[in-house]
Length: 89
Image (tube, rainbow, N blue to C red; front, side, top):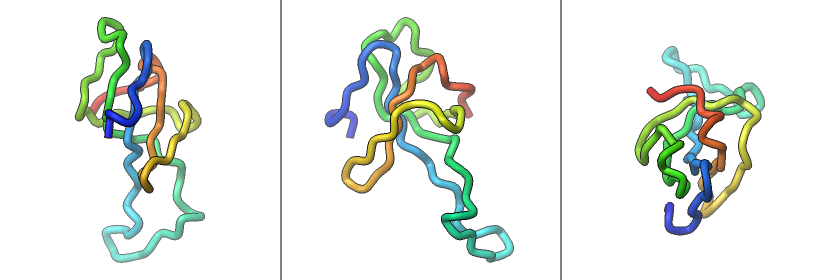
């Protein structure tokens, strides 16, 4: 997938990880009740690798309303500045 979009500079391409749609007790959570995702998996990193502290495959946490949303082949991606990433899990 990273061959379709290659981020430039200090940007990172994230695959947005969706929340569970069913709780542990079996209740289904409708889309209208879900919060905006804040977790993603790093798919590609920009060409300024000295300033980027994450690598491909890392699962990261980012602010709710950051980056630029992109939808390719039915999958949601986010292009975000590496400095906006809050942490790695």
